[in-house]
Length: 173
Image 1 (cartoon, rainbow, N blue to C red):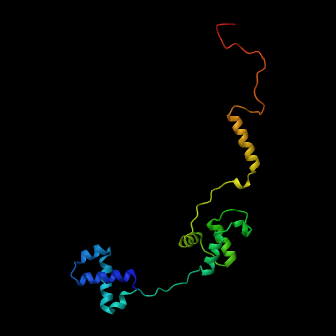
Image 2: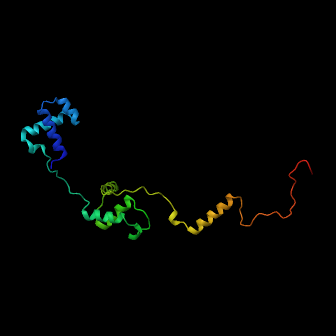
Image 3: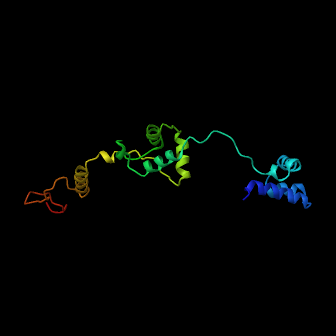
């Protein structure tokens, strides 16, 4: 099976061979004139084999299969199960954990890209103290707030048993 780049090069040359004006070929394939000239020269020098992509050399990726497997396993678990005190992973934290687990250090940006490549996404961590709060104290504060909103600062019911009150009427003393 041929690459899409090979097919694009072959289409350009076939269009030129069929008599299509160069400007139309350039516009249809969204390429520059220089690119088209390069493809044509490659065809003239070596025919089909020069239109195919060559193997790209370079450094092999740092993130091996075992690294990716550990990354996926770690993201799926609570960081506290690994002995950390925080409850959510961030890219820098995950980088540090994986560095200690595998000896391979990546940047946080590249780790995020690896996660995206494997269909894993996360939101930025919200700064909160919720995990440090006492649930009983929170419930007590909510009850107190409800009482204050109703106009009662104490639990005892408000009653008036015969205390003198000013007359509400202005016409009678």
